[in-house]
Amino acid sequence: MRISEQYGRGRPVYSFEFFPPKTEQAAEDLIATVADLKEALHPDFVSVTYGAGGSSRTRTLECVTNIRKRLGVEAMAHLACMGHTRDELSEIITHLLAEGIENILALRGDPPKDSAGPAADDRHFRHATELIALLKENFDVCVGAACYPESHPEAESAAADLLWTKRKVELGAGFLITQLFFDNREYFSFKWRAREAGIEAPIVPGIMPITNVAQIERFTKMCGAHIPEELRQRLDKHRDDPGVVMAIGIEHAITQCRDLMNGGAPGIHFYTLNRSHATRSVLAALKRL
Image 1 (cartoon, rainbow, N blue to C red):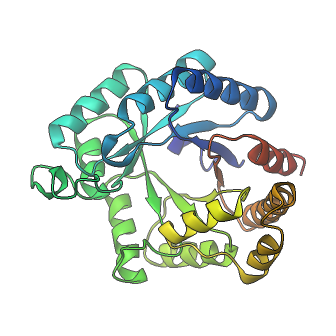
Image 2 (tube, rainbow, N blue to C red):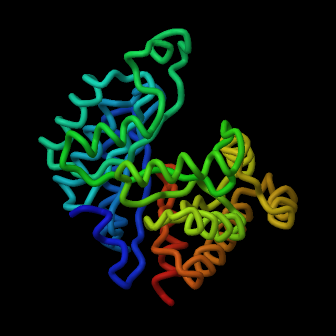
């Protein structure tokens, strides 16, 4: 089923994001995790990320295919275009379609470690908008894209970043999933600005329950998100107590998600980091409403 068709049906859409496992055993463990989530919480779809420069390409394709075929869960493949040529991307997309995968999250991705290599060649894609255009012009697929409530860290300005987001939708992205954030005011402000700019696509909040302080500090530094001061102080006070940190993270995520749903969010996309406990707890609490 096409993911864009799931939004706007009068009920929230819940989804989980995983990264591709590095070993065969980890792959089986992930299948077991998704099977458990399916049984307990019935997610609407799951997605599988794509490594920088396509470093996890094979694992992503295997994982997303296995989830759909073995478990019957709708799956979306992330596809990052940075460092790929048009022919390489077309080959990947053709393979996905042959395996029954018709939902793709179109991303720029991070530059390859060898920044003087393929990314510097004009034959290679550099922007998510190029990938979206390729997908919509040449393939029968459902396309999603990323957006940034606090702006992309490389954006010239919030206004410029919003123009790029609008262009993604104009080229064919049917829904948008946000970068992680911890202050809902950022989401609601971004959504208002997007609607004012004429962006009508569903804007899905991306939520990551905090389970480790040092880890979330690294993530927010990379993506430009901020942690509200009150939450930061609570986490810092207990940073050496994993149990308390997880409890604080789950509590904040539940409050955050409830507020988002009450404010009209079309659903929640959970960044799981391949761990199910925190996201299970949050979604279970939401489904009890």
